[in-house]
Length: 439
Picture 1 (cartoon, rainbow, N blue to C red):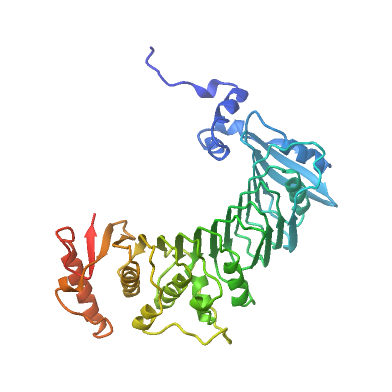
Picture 2: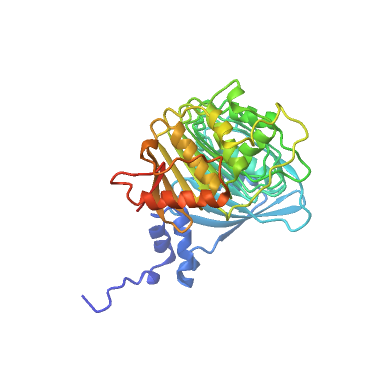
């Protein structure tokens, strides 16, 4: 073999290169455009202009032998709509609408299947719509209606979108909505939907006919301007999720519910099937720690709890409430919160990411270790990515007796410093009530 063993891919014709990268998933294939100007050339979008929406929709719905990229252009009324479209060989279509620079227009997006597809079979399995605007809403609705076998839908960064009304056929399994800052109302009817994710300002979410929904992510990022938190709507949303197995939820959302006077253990329903809970927020203080403890009262079957404290996330203050469903019951002393927290008979695993040795974090771990019958230890990871175990040990092995509610802050710090020092011998066995094993 010669001295140069590198295969000169760039000498191949565009059609051959496009065929080669089509063995990659569409998103990864598009990234080859950053390798060189030669690779970028094969991703230069083809221009496709027409006055017929049906013609564009038909092109996107047809099966593709290789990945394609087009710049679509069509008229709607007196306005021109521009879309960057990508279509993959596995049935993925990604549409990015050109953002409007003039004054934003609010709009309502209704997505529903076509009653009769006229014998035409769509190849689209995944549809990703980005930056849909008032001019592009009709085309989005038309395209969605023709995707009889659509399995996954993503809607992202749609400025002006206030109302989303989705009705899906039996094929839709996954639905994601994110970064739509004017969103007010979402209604979803999809009887085979398994996964739903929402990220953004808090809207009214109504899930109808979604009995097979097993995984939900609710990453609420505060309220829209001049709006109030509606605890009754929030409780109704949780009540519609009784079949789910996995939930991701923002600590702010639980804190708002408790601040409004919602007492989870008094609710008429429980999340009896919930096995795994992801709690996320930018910080942990007494309020969101206690609201998490309160929420665990409706999670009797919980097996895994993941707590992620990420300071890079937007820190959203809890709103002030002028009235309550019940008298505010939280924000009491730690012993009272502990007394009002149910036993977690099935909890087997807890991990804390972003740990900073804050007092509230330590108290939460102590609570979980006491209430979790099957929980022997907690995995803790600091912001510096150091990990260790926190375990419970019989009081008879403690070096000293300690009442947490007594003593000043400096004494508490000294106590936990002693526990951390003792826990280096955790495997031999441990000698402290909360013990740390670094690894």
